[in-house]
Amino acid sequence: MSILKTFPKISVLSLLVFVLIAFKFLHITGVPVFIVSSLCILGIVVLIGKATEEISLYYNPVIAGIINATFGNITELIISVIALLNGEVEVALASVIGSIIANLLLLFGLSMISGGTIYKEQNIGTQAAQSNITLLGIILLYLTIPSIVLFAPLFDQSIKNAYSIALNISIWFSALILITYSLSLYFSLKTHKSIFLPEGEMLSEKPEWSKSFSIIVLAICTVAVAFSSHMFVESIEEVHKVLGWSKFFIGGIIAAIVGNAAEGAVAIWVARENKISLSFQVAISSCTQVGLLVAPVLVLLAALIGKPVALTFNIFELVALFASFIIAFAALVDGKTNWFEGVAFVMTYFMIAILYFMHP
Image (cartoon, rainbow, N blue to C red; front, side):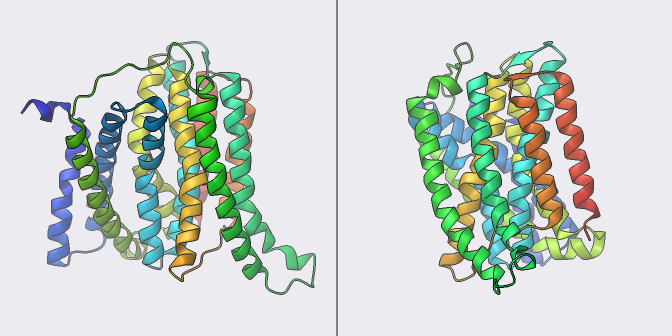
């Protein structure tokens, strides 16, 4: 009974997986499945975060960082892959951009507000901010260049098959981005880890779960989130018809918020304890992992299974991505935060959410 007290309270939502199983056998579809699967994924994501944290405590910081990096965004990856396999390419791509924007603007914006209402100014650290801004710049180029290639025929009539070029660029860029991601892990977890874990914010915790129990929970949660994500994706078509929400909005906003809610709660909580650099690392790591790991894995996996996908996004997504990165660069370059910068981040996210909602 005592071990149950160590489970996060919100993780009780993960039990809704049994309701989803019943829905599957009873052939219930549509909005009820969409609502239940969203809540279920939220609960499972919290459990995945807890299990990952517990496993990390048994290893040195480098191995722990790799474990967190691997499982930190597994939900986004599973949702994207299942959407791809179900032919919902728009949802798969929208969830990639949506997760980046949600982490960068909403998650960290709320953290800055949470910490800024208690402390007048909080320090991230200039070096950490600048290093991550560099990674954000690489991600911006990686995700936008294939889309820009589609406009090339307007300026160079000798280019006849722009989409084919964009597809090849996406695949080659994805391979390079995975290499970049691996080197960024080595940089942040090995050679320059002191930059990213400033003295005074190091956490010394003792695990509440045994290593074997943590691994079992993580394995079960991974299977459960795969099933729940499958039900979530299958319900999108009917939700689109019944509620009139675009698949673009569902993938880019709803799925992104659900998938990142657990990390958001952690970032907001530690910001109130004046650990804003830790909050920043939670938010920015989630953001960069999606751009440097989830997106390239999705592209390369799609090519391997014979369903190649180019990283081509619509004008709404490109505007949202550029706006997010510009405001993030302007606010974070000095390595300091305050509550009003958080308000600016959150309001920008709300504007982007409205933009997504208005998409036909």
